[in-house]
Structures are given as C-alpha cells and as structure tokens.
Length: 155
Image (tube, rainbow, N blue to C red):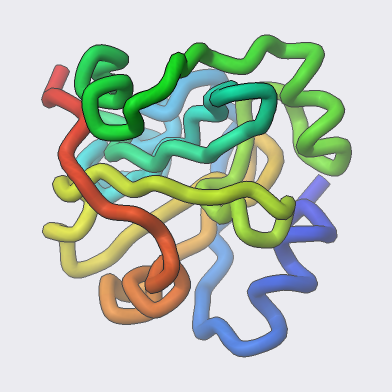
C-alpha cells in the first residue's frame, strides 16, 4: 500500500508535498527514527470521540495528549476512539497509521501549538511505510481552519 487514496486525492488538489517511503514501523517514534526525522517534526493523529462525533487531534510524535487540557479547552466529555471506530472512519488506512489530515475524512481537526515550530512537518500516509513531507508553510495552509491550542506535553 502507498498513500491512502482519500488522502492522496485531497493532497493532489492543491498541496505541495513529497512522499518518503521507509521500512515498516509500528510506532510513530520508530517511524521518525526510520526516516531520520525528529519526533517533534512528525505529526501524530489521535482520533477522539466528542459528544457522539469524532475529532482529529494532531500532536508531535514526541508528545502525548493531556486529556484534562482537552476537556478544559473543549468544555466537553472527550474520549479516545477505539480500533473499531478507526477502521470505520479510515477505511483506506492501515490501523495505527491514521493521517494527520482529518479534513479529507470529514473530521474537524485540533492542532497542538507545539507542532507549529519545526521548519518541516511529516505525517503518516495511511500505511506503516509511507510519510508525507510538507514545509511548515504548506502544513499551516493545509491546517488553516483547524483550532489551535496547547493540549500535549513532551514525552
């Protein structure tokens, strides 16, 4: 498998990106190592359930979310989506390789402020062997409609 078809169709409309292939990995940390990029540059997607709907949270791979911060910012009950839900929401992606571009899957996106810092951003392509490389400017343009606030801490 390469880039998830839904993601590729979305990116091909008007996004400048590069594709990086790598050896199969099972965690975002290992993906960053395999591609020789910092975990701060790899955008990790976490799918959340909120009031019966879904939301995609984007944090650096070197961070983990703080649910208490999410709840205080969103003012709602927030939980992690389960594997069954992920398979339904991302039918063309391998489990555990959700792209950090929720817009193409009709999901609202929230972005942790710390992902705004690196000059280059990388994200999963929908399998465990493909990364998408974007400049920070291109990533910011892609995520212009997303809500931004701090909800993660460095591991």
